[in-house]
Length: 415
Image (tube, rainbow, N blue to C red):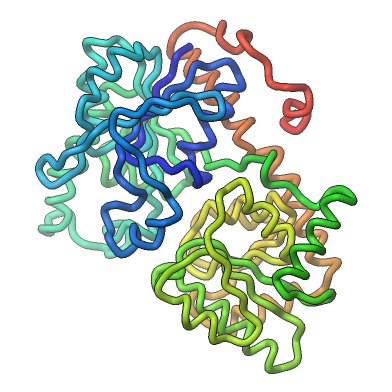
């Protein structure tokens, strides 16, 4: 089976779907190709893109290279009617000759072009939706269907999305609220949606499990200036207003003022960096490649994401950390049994929740539960196996899963 994943952007240092799903599909014997533009991650928002500028790296159109068992093809881009469009996508797909094409969104030029080329190239098309209600204002403002904003959405999103869906086998929404956004605003029929959460690379993200892990944890904590007995709360991602990690920094500083043994570890960069550095007990660390991030989580004790949902929550949980998020988060499965919720933007309530995790036995119990849950239900290995079954069903074939086998060690972590 030959699969082409179409992604607007790609960064070798990230741990996103376009990095991880191809890796594990290739381990299952799928011939994987990624087609991406040279645009930087989050190119739509200059302020956000600037945060990742030095970390994300730069791609060049025309590049073809092999990464972890899959092939990356970089194509050009241009703006058409105000939105990014891949240049030369049709020719690239004709050269690859995929059996399956997978997009990460049901709307936009990439999805529309993939639906259009399907007629001549004969592949099966699958889409996805990663838009949470929390980052899609129309899902929350209660505007009338006949408002100018909603009618504009119908014209630019719902109708194009419905047309793409006519050519689509399935649309993979990463959470229930993403499915709701896809049906209400992107024109995707409910019957074509399947919930498929984002996953965790359990080779990279795993709990402290042996003497080597213990030694690495202790050495890294010493290097970062954390003492034995201190409870390290880690956040990773942008230091921006929408993510608001300074809320955690303020909570840590307040707890320390009251004599509580809390510290803060902030991995990333952004506009709140200086504020975080001024908070007592808080350490800021630059972005690191995904291959190095697990060690930082294992050096911590609690993972905290004060506002928006983040894939990093899953990675931290897989490393055995209890997770703290706000009470409005819709992907509740990320906290069930392994985390706690605080009331959004209420510092006193965040302090209350952190104090509930002061007990080491409580943290250990919740962390162990989260690590098991991630390995069993959220690993990219298990998601890739389910995806292969769907692709084979669409093609009327089950042959490809026998072409290559994952190692017994990896299969053991799934079953």
